[in-house]
Image (cartoon, rainbow, N blue to C red):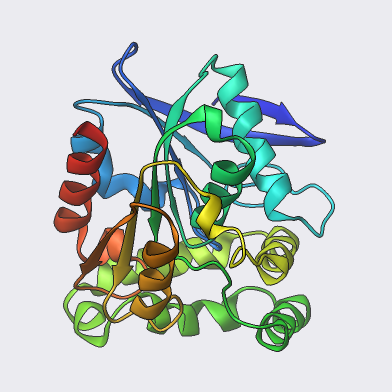
Length: 259
């Protein structure tokens, strides 16, 4: 089980695909571990070297004292890339992972090949919403928010048709360490990239779920409209569109990265 040390934390990661192929780093959403990308792995690994890591405070990565910032989380990605001797890599991040991608594009553009920003926004939510969520988790743990999270992450039709998948993702959210979760909530709460989008020069694909209440298609269009030459794709799903519309997501990202 490989780990890399980064700024007082141990970051858990896994490798797949063929050595020598272009590298793709996958970055998960708030409240998940890197298994959220399982449905993409078979196709991505045919043409890419895949690096998946658990974000600080999530999965098997350590829970260093918080709060965190998106800069902290992005520097964990760079530490991982450095340890694997990846001078350049593609990056695909969903939700909080997309925020990490934006920071990398602004602050380490020489490291990026192409960038995929999925189900994300230059600013997500407001301080009041994040503060309320943090307070709930501090008082009651992860279970109370996990069920409500499934309602935002998947459409009613998907939840009805795929109860076992939804139950598995709900258990994943419930398993996240509360302190790691609230520390990352603070990172998302503080991040606002709206004034910097025009400076992103990395080739970028923006993906939104047409039924996503958290990072709406309007948020995705705003990213694509303000990032020079970005391409926009909308999928038939809610927030975790890489799971709900998995085949379409995988096809769009593979086509973009391999073109």
